[in-house]
Image (cartoon, rainbow, N blue to C red):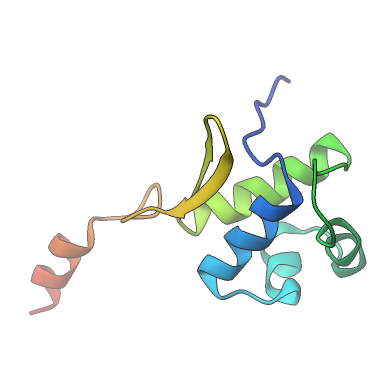
Length: 97
């Protein structure tokens, strides 16, 4: 299976987790990747060097929570207005009133 990976750097991993205000333990729980693995992957700078399936699991968990990875000239992250697959907040708020 050819999953294209957008999560490319250690800095992106740390930044995505920070945007969500997640601890390493929360990321481990949401992604199914062990806490020791996350602790090993995050320090330093440069390319994220890990098993393909590990990176895919991390990326999917972060994207499901609303993180978008940007990989133009400089890789980065941003928080989407609405996490993929969720009902727009404006409609959800209207329904609850």
